[in-house]
Structure formats: C-alpha cells, structure tokens
Image (cartoon, rainbow, N blue to C red; front, side):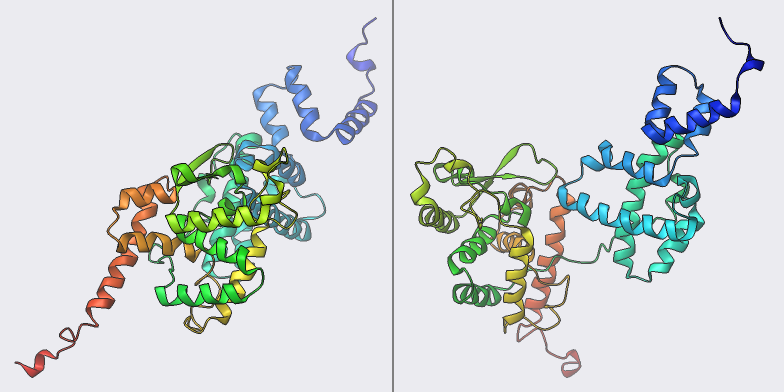
Length: 366
C-alpha cells in the first residue's frame, strides 16, 4: 500500500540520502538521479553548483581534457592541483565548494600571492584554465570566458630558442667522452644532433625503431603517443647508434624480446632511462664547459633541449628549406619552425657586423 505524503518521515529520508551520498560519492549519486529522471534540467544545475572541489578534481583526472595531455604535463598539472587544493582548503575550509574557489577575485588573489615570475604565473594559469574549462562544462554547463582575463597565459614571442655553437659542441663532445658512461652519452649526444628528436622521444626508443636500410628511426611523437612516426637520421649518427646497440645488446639477440628492449636503459633494456637522468648529466657537462658563458649556464638558457635547436639551426645554415626542417622536427605547424628563421637572421646580422668593412665610421668620410 502506497504511503501518503503526510506519512513520510522527511528527516529520516534526508539522513538516508546523505548516507547514500557519503557512501557512493556525490557524482555517482547525481548520475543515478539523472538516469532515473528524478532531476529536471534546472534542478540538475542547482545540484551541480554544490559540488565539492575534491570531487571536481576527481572528475578532472578522469576526463578527456586531462588524459589527452602528455605524461609530463599530467604530472605537472597534478602538482599544480595539489598546490591549489591546499591553498583553497587553507582559506575556505577542509571541503571547499567549487563555486567558492573559482571566482575571478579568488583566482586573482591566488596568483598574486605567489609572487612568481610572469612565465611561472602563465604556467599556473594554463593549468587553471584547463581545470576550470573541464569542470565548468561538466558541473555548471558554462564556459570560462569570464575568467580568461584573470587567467592570462602570456607567451614571450620574442624569446628565441637557444642553440650551441660548433665550438661548444666540440667541447661538449670531449667532456662526454671523459665523463660517466661515455659510450652511452656520446651516442645520446649524436642521436640528438643527428635527428633533432625530443628528449621524451629519445628515452622511448627501442631497438626495433632503428631502421638502417631506410636511414631513419621511429619515435613516439609529441601528441601522438599511440603511433610511431619516422624521423631521418644522419649517416654518422646512425652508425654510432647501430654500433652502440650491437655493443650493448649483442649478447641478447636470441632473446624473444630483443627488439622490444629500450636502447637507453639501466636494466638491460627492460625500462627506459628516465629523462631527469639525461637532463642532469648534460646539465653537469654544460656547467663544466669553458666555452659556455655563465649567463648561458643559467636555468632556461642552454640545456639538453638546445641540442634539438642546434640540429634545426645547422640545417638552416646548410641551406635546407624551412618546410623540410618542419617535417624533420615533427612540428605540426610551420609557425613553430619559423622561429628558427629569426634566430638564423640574428646570427647573420651578428656575422655581417663583424666584417672589417662593416664597422667603418661614416663621419670619417663626410
């Protein structure tokens, strides 16, 4: 027999609903209500506005916007998420609501409190844009247009990629040969200089990726982790890489998983060498190099990534056209490659100003 409304114990029902939400989580409880069509559109929006920041974070970690990011970006965004969550909990209590920590004023005060360099603020703003774009769309059915002026991502278009000179490359080569694991790092150095691949692409190289007959290697390119793409390699770098593989893994050729072994590894090719290991090694070499100025040794100046820039610059100096360089570097957009033209132009201006007839004083003639 159905109960009349006046016979319902609403206090008891509230308690049971709260227990269910606590047991299964707000998001799952909300999904069930939607599936049972117990919420109309207006009610759904009201419930969404009461979502906890912690639940919004849980959703973000499982959404497409987050999962399509490369692993290094995911790691960085998780770190930024924890910093932001701690800040919100400190000001708004242990379980802040998403709506209370996503206002333009709150975000401005958060960014202002950091007192960081503009580039750092831009990185944090990029994370917050990604986070609120996903969560606003899910919970508020809104876009983040009102926050864009607060979460500005400033890009220094005048900042040029840094490349090593031929003199610096010569010294780095010598320091590598005299340092730790000389054969490994000599090979790594010349794979960078002979292909222009990224550090992440180098770390994921497997023996099967080296194709001497085509003079190319296959890499898991940025933004396309599932499929490998071909990159050309210079004859010298290919020879060095092939000899290294033979020396390092020649005794394992009869193993069933030989071709799946990672080329640069500390455990016989089972897992790849970590990026930070290579960054630290080349960072120490750069610090030791006498041909590199102290200014160029500062953070964000010359680094292991500069070997990629050097590859591109040397191609330009050799007369290779910008479209071919774009393909060799694996750039999606030509604008990403055109920045090297500016770098090359600056080098030409510097060179021409060193011409003995270029420094004459006009006042001596007029």
